[in-house]
Length: 221
Image (cartoon, rainbow, N blue to C red; front, side, top):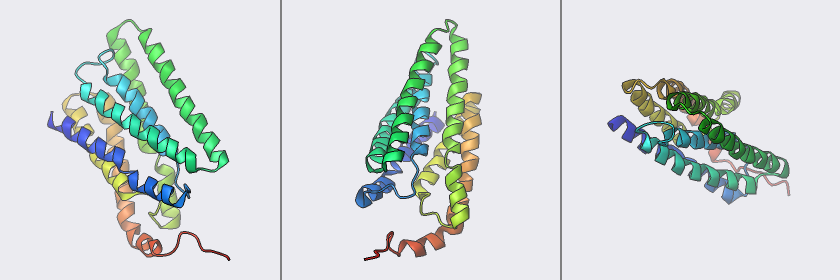
């Protein structure tokens, strides 16, 4: 039980970790080089995992349902903020993906409810939640590529990486102790990617601190 509680605490930490990033976006009124894809993937994951945690799909996963429903509210807030400050092309792309997420969720819910056998429904939604978790954890890979290319962690927030690692590790243990492969497999992958992000952060931290003292934009006037 303690590992699930810790997992939910760290998950909440993951949900609030982008707040400094969005404060910067609002302050500069620009999304700069930040990407909205991780928040799209996170929203899809939260919505599917919320459905997975409901009594209609699985047993004794109420905490999974509640924490992911809260997470969905945070992700929607971040995505709306991102859309507001993005340029027209990215604005339309993000809006389209947001609508796509809700449409996909509707299809998943309606489709799974057509499965009369409870165990089969659990396996079906479990595979989908597993896939969505892996997609969420894999979504920062292009940011990792950017970090390696630029040797700077400016656009890979530390607390987001740390919270991802802590939450993944907690749910990895929870899944192992409860023999739930739908939980421990994707969170095992998330743990590995979290370690990679933290390793890159500490490797390139010094360079990013030096660059943070320079203005984000240089006036040509």
